[in-house]
Image 1 (tube, rainbow, N blue to C red):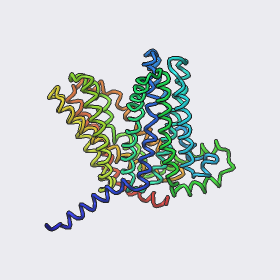
Image 2: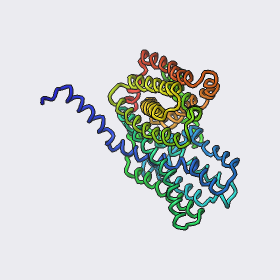
Image 3: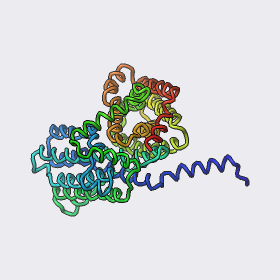
Image 4: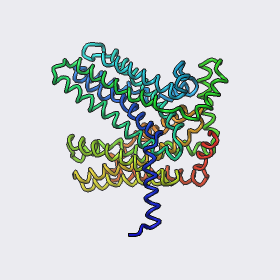
Length: 456
C-alpha cells in the first residue's frame, strides 16, 4: 500500500503538534499548573466542608466567600512582581524563579498554619485570617506563574502550554478536594480524632506544594529576564514604592499606545461572553428540567471535567495548526453553536443522554475557546518589564463579562424561556466575532509577532 504525500504530511503535522506537549518548557508549565490548582480549594470548598463538619453556623460559612477576594484583585500588586526582585532568592535563582520559590514557601507555611486552625475550637475570624493568607499566597503564585509561562514559551507553544496548565490545575484542585476528603475519612477510620485528621490532611496538602518547589528548581529562567535585570540594575537605588508605581504606570502606558486599543479591550471583554451568559444559569436550567442532584453531579460535573480537559488539548492542537486569528474564529464559533444543544434539550425535556451530550459539547468547545483565548492574551503581553501586570489586568478585564454583563441572565431566562434563552446566549457571541473580523482586517494579529521579535 502506497502512502500519499498528503497522508505523510498530515501524520507529520499531527506528530509535531503532539510533540510540543513533551517539550521541557511545556512540561515545566504543566507541573506549575498543579502547584497553582492545589491551594484554591483549601481556602474555599474544602475549608467550608471542614467548617460545616465542625458545626460552624451557615451564616459564618457564607462569609468565607470573601476569602477569595485576592484572586479578584491580584492585579493591584502584580506591579510589585514586575518591579522588584526578591532579596537573595532572585540573585540565586533569577527574577521569576525567585518569586516562584517565595510564593511556594509562603503557601507551605500558610497551609500548615491553616491546618492548626481548628474551626470548632478557634474564633471564626482566626480561621478567616489564616485562609486569607493562603488565598493571598496562592493568588500571588498565579501572577508569577502566568508571567513565567508567557515569557518562557514561544508563541507557537502558548496554547499547548495553557492546555497542559489547565489539565494539571484541575488535577491539583481534585487532589485538594476529593483527595483531602478521602484522606480525612481514612484517618478517621483509623480512629484519629476529627480535628487531628483534618490537620494531618491539610499538612499533607502543604507537602504536595513541594512538587511546585522542585519544578522551580528544575526550570530555567526565561531569556527575557535579562532585559528586566538590566532595567532593575539601573534603578536599584530608587525608592521601591516609586519603582512599583512606575511599573504600574509604565504597563498601562505601554498597552494603551497600541493601535486599536479600545477595540482590543472590548474584544477581551466580549469573546467569552457567550459562555459566561449561559454558564451562570446552567444549574437552574438543570433543576427546572427535573434532574436530580446525583444526576447533576454525575453528568454535569464529571462529564464536564473530562470534556473541558479534552477541549483544552484540542484547543492546543488547533492553535498549533492554524494562525491565531483563524484559531479564534474556530473557538468563537464553536463555543457559540454549543449553546443550541441546551436549546434542544429544553424543547425535548428531561433526557439524561441529551443532557450528557449538550453538557459535553458546551464544556468541550469552551475548553477549546479558553485555551486559544488565553494564548491570545499571552501574545499581548510580550514586554518583559510588564508581563505580570498586563496579564493580570487583561484577565481581570475578561472576567468583567462573567461577573457583571451576565448579571441579568436570570431576567432574560425568565422572560424568554429556556430554549430561547440559550439561543440568545449563542447570539451573544456576535459582537465579539464582529470585533474579531475588524481587528483581523486592521492587521492586529500581526502585531503580537512583531512585538515578540522586538522584545527578543
